[in-house]
Length: 345
Image 1 (spheres, helix red, strand yellow):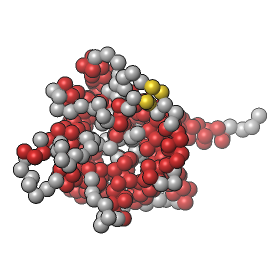
Image 2: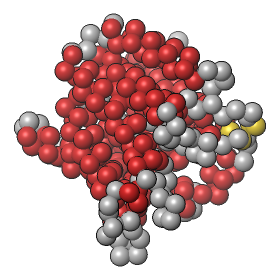
Image 3: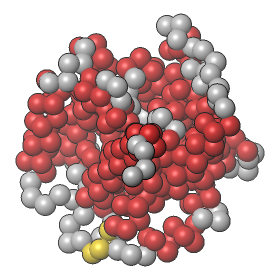
């Protein structure tokens, strides 16, 4: 479809960067205002309200994505989520590590990118280390370990949930709606979450249909932060040697959108580490997230908000492992101080 849009001076990959920048700007503004974060929805102090916001985004993302699939605008047959051989060991281990990492860093990759734009230097440090680790896992010294773990696969007859896609869509949406109604989240924040969710099918359709070009194809993708963080880091360091892509535009847009929102609503403030122990914990968590996010095939947004609407078994396994890793790590950390105060028998 791209050739009919009249962008004679630009290629589809070039337009995709600008498109991703706009998507990222919208996400950054909305996520900064709503506090959108799966970690908060799982273990935050106001987890029920945070879960309502996250699930409102998921419902819209799910309905919009499946509507695009049912109308033949997009198809996920060749997407990495739908590989015939499921690298289950890598996905589960990666999800557990990512979940543990985001507890240690007090935020997932998407939330920390937003916080970077609001002046949080802890978040900026984590994102840089996260991106370095992700790049090392994809193409560097950690790639043999990734390849080895990914070799343990489970063959699938169908990489999507079995049965009717419409039935699964309805079941997931209704379950999410029931939880939203009990969340106590305020309507403006729920609407903000819904707008975040709308960005997911918009990105899928934009890259997979509107910008589709037989002569200069681009990958069909939506919101994600693991590979884009690695791409953004590499582009920043070597922009004269490599071109920007969708992920680079997305990550830059998110940080810029969060900066604009925090300045406009006066929530911008500089923050940094409080002590060496905290620094070490955050750095360790960043490494776990970078390595785990690549193994799992995505983060809470890439495998969760964007992945679940595809009804992919791989995406559902990844987000389940991330949730388990988050809950288990939080339980261990909260139990440790109590255990330390119990006198020895």
